[in-house]
Length: 253
Image (cartoon, rainbow, N blue to C red):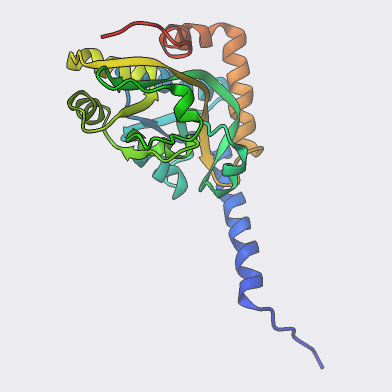
């Protein structure tokens, strides 16, 4: 008589999810065209990220289909496996937070990104004070995809322009985000009541579908990135952008 063991559904469910995740990652790596999302930040950043991922793909004999959309949407697209790659996102410094993310970071970083603290000139804030926990409870905003990058509570924003305008009016106390994108908006808006100071420098990496770190697609990105650096293509594409985005530049509106 054949004995059939009943396996609880939950024992099958979790391994099944893992298998599906690995299959999705393998498909993304083997596909001739990568589905890529790029955040809607400054025009220069969009152009740099788009050209860079296309160059990396080309170096690996692939193509990259790029869509530009709001930052929070790009994260959602990777989380729900509607896109293979997000190019790029700033990596959370605290690695203990990575496991809770619904996506993975690539092994290789594309570029360093300088984050700046923008404040109202009438209400100076110390960076050291914020990093110590924001004991005074300042109202700080950052981009919605970056709220976990800080050791204190920050409010999510979906618009650089809106946050800077609130800061100018004194509705919020501070805004922290990337120098390149925020400075572009600040100059375009012509706001004069805002002060800026260096906050920190982070790694900008690629976001991959959950389970993708260390996988085939991650390896292709690492290899392609090395190839375009060796050929000089990286410096040609990323160099001009990095000059204004990677190192803090002192100036005031």
